[in-house]
Amino acid sequence: MASMMGVWAFCQSLLQTVFPPELRFASLKFFYRLLNWFSSYCYYDITEIDGVNTNELYNAVQLYLSSSASIIGTCLSLTRGLNSSTITFGLSNNDRLVDTYNGATVEWNCQSKTIPNVFLAIAA
Image 1 (cartoon, one colour):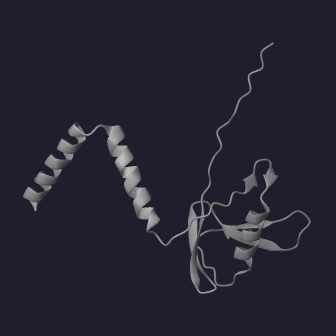
Image 2 (cartoon, one colour):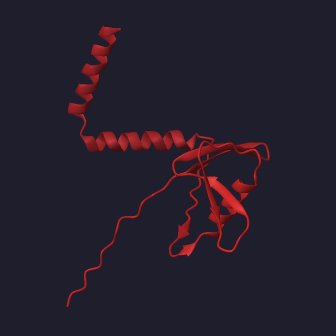
Image 3 (cartoon, rainbow, N blue to C red):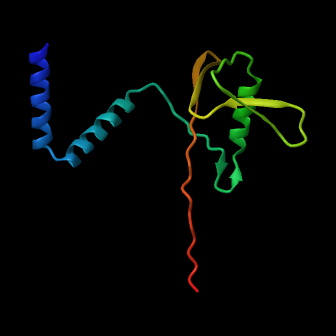
C-alpha cells in the first residue's frame, strides 16, 4: 500500500509540473460538465429577493414547506408576517431536508449568500 501511495504521489507531482494550472482547471471543468450531462439531477436556484422585489416563488416554496406535515428538519426557521396569526416555517441557513412530491424525491437546500457592501463615491 505504501508503494502504491508513493507512485501516486510521484505521478501527481509529475502531472503538476508538466501541465500548467490553467490546463488542469480547463480539463477538470470539461470533466465535470461531461459528468453533469449524464446526471439525472436537476438544480433550481430560488432567490428570496429578485433585484429589488420579493420573489413570489420563494414565498410559495416557503408556504409549501410550511404546509407539509412530513418534514423533519434539524433546524427550522419560524416566521410570522406582520398582522398575521399563522406561523410558517422553512429551512435555516445551510440546512437541507428530503421530501417526496408525486413519487419523486426532492431535496431542499437553504444556502445564504452575503452580498458585499457597495460604497458609492461621490465626487464634489
